[in-house]
Length: 542
Image 1 (cartoon, one colour):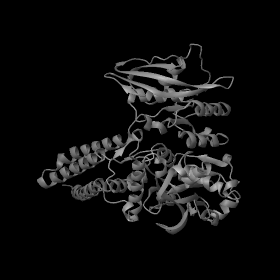
Image 2 (cartoon, rainbow, N blue to C red; image 1 turned 180 degrees about the vertical axis):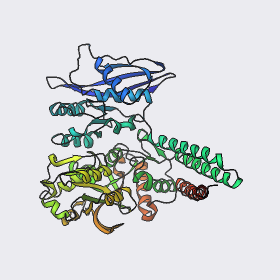
Image 3 (cartoon, one colour; image 1 turned 45 degrees about the vertical axis):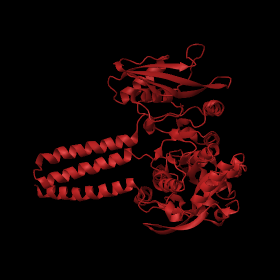
Image 4 (spheres, rainbow, N blue to C red; image 1 turned 120 degrees about the horizontal axis):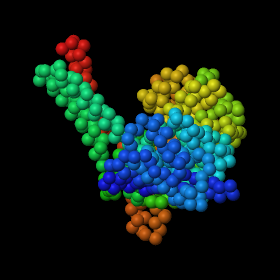
């Protein structure tokens, strides 16, 4: 894994897959050291490593970078030679992580070419890519991250990639450009606050030059204090753990800014504390699939997730429901949505023409992509006739909307989203002049799990008016008490946990004003008031 000494930083958790002429393959692990107090050209085991590293550093404007040493395991040139250029993406990722630090602690496996000097990630030969996927199935650790060219994720490879995500818990990162992977070597949350702090500092310097009165100076102090409160609140939230801290007392959520993490987790933490079940923490994850797997590994943990993804897994593994208890599914529902440029298109028509329609979906392995696969599975004569060749995957729901807006082939996008009328994605749909299509049919309403409907039909109030669509309930799951059959005390504790959460009024599981929310709300009010007065002063020329 990545390590750092006093004046050096090491990265040992980046690798690239290789396949030889006989079809067998292996993972080549990169071993990198950056000497932070020395500056020189990189030392590499292969001149092609050196070429791509220098080219990408030049493109990125890196001046006088630290001296870096690269090696591989197994060692290249010692009876093991490379052909092709698909190693380039992994080498550049490792170079940036070892020089800048890292935010991703899981193993990172990457394949892809960097043929030009513009950061574009070039495709890997289709046959070669299939062989590399076989290497991942055979040799990659679970919970790793796989970065690859987006273009390679379409067509025949898509089914195998979905299996990797579902069966091996691999986080898929299909990308078009190197910059899409910046989160691997930066910490976005911190950098945002640093930028805000710099902005406040700049504002204070400018304002302080021409504000003299005590009242006006107090306004500047208010702005500064409010920003400090926001930063402290963000950095001191002690009920949040990253994905590496998952365990028996985790409440497994989503990404740092996802609704499961930001809206629904805190009420669960408080409920469990009041039931004398302390120590539970909101723990980040890659989403529903990873949350299911965590409950199987740590039965006392609690997970949030899409009910339809649980149903999809239960279809593939019927024994799953013997180990998992659905505590409740009655407090929130994520809407299923399609988006198109054609204002006359309906969901019924999409089902009829599915075999010819190009679909744009969020990333393979994501919850929405799994929802679409589940709908296809349960509607074989409609959506199920859509082929993998007609699917293309993009980074997220926002990318789905932008892709549909710019597509020349009248593609239809699909995403899963809480129906917040102020959500940026719904505003983007309106600004792009697209049509939002509710996803609802008799076939969808007939899908059941253990005799209960997997989807509901719900009316959501959006800016464009009330819209009725299907939605997948947010499920709270944990391990079944029966898995503790040999330990009556643990079985009883598990029953208490389930009973406590089931007895909570549904409204208690919806977002409540937390300490962080109060700080943001209060600070935001003071900032807005202060900014209004400051702008009045500026307009008046005082």
